[in-house]
Length: 512
Image (cartoon, rainbow, N blue to C red; front, side):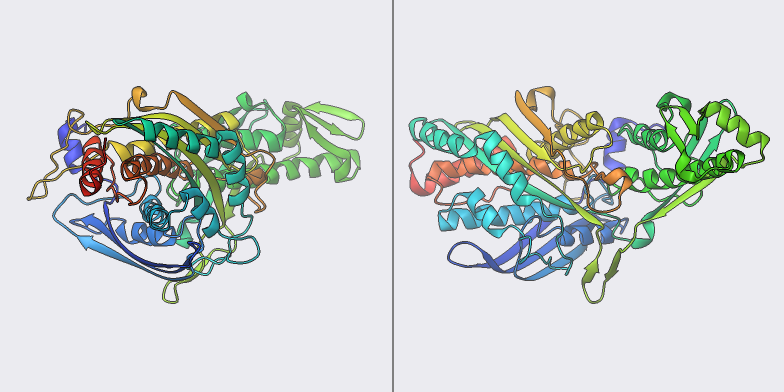
């Protein structure tokens, strides 16, 4: 069934809108000592996945910061709109937007540079490193990533230049923000953290691969094929991936929570290692040698002083009645969470990143442009840098759209009014900053036993877009010489930016 665009947009669930209330206590230097945050998610008319989504928003209400004494409360609100559902980030972005708003609010109240305040509240490596759900923050790259991005983006030099520009420009105001990302990787429902794979080797040396993940343009099949090719030491074009089918791999988990490559890649690696071990054992028997005398390398298999092509080894296995199919399985170790106690280890590891964005706004219209974006993101030992860079770029632009232009409006009866491209604006190429610099963190393997020590890259980059929203609020705050925080709702549309500037200018009458 193919719906008309208007019907599709009215019926299909959206990302949950959130209403946030907060109270914070801070030390004189701006460090958090106590936080109370209420997160109310608009679930629509039915539950859908709202329970897990609000849970993840609560888990990520800290983002990169040690909260001190914290009380995080989530509310699942039933309303008269279409049922809202899962979307990239799965509640995490809503929780992280809340704490980033808090950080900017404290910075304005205390008269501190927002980045300085953020760094003071970062999780430490040996202390102040326990989350509000009692998981220890390990392999903390926050300070390292921030320091590297500060330098490469010339944050403080640009901050000074922007202050000078704003003081001399009555109508155009610039804003700058550098915000971090710490995102937990794993399904919050622990039983979903499992995957299977099936590999078949044929006597001509070709391989058929089936795994439980869904390829949706994110490059999952490419990564999983690369993993199998690396284990068997054959060319990737010798591997054919067949469409995901529960007739081959049963009871698959959703391809979600950034876990596609982590789970299915590890399961495929397991199946490939089983097959390689069988082939090694067979060659050891045929040549009366030890396993250390057998080597798979670049499509050639060496057993003592005898060399075979991979296809010849597959043919030998068939003649010697060695099974050439294997099922692989993987479950994430060490994941546990006591919901009643509100503590545990719901995430296997954290992915980190940071973005620095600069914007310019027009005080007369509220229109704005994103001038530059510098991004540094942690993917562990990248399985495919080209794919990972694309995911970071795409995630950032998607997050940028969510927080700036993608405004949803309903009428009093719960009907969606922004039900087509004429009223619902997604980012265009003109919204992408003309100067966009994306870098992956280098030489930092994931210390956890993930596939080749890589890290997930699907959802974490989405939250990099928060930097653009914070930069817009920085530009608005400049109207009142940064004495007040504008508290702009998301998305920060030109209308909201305009009225935010008007409010601050009206209170102090110094817009010009």
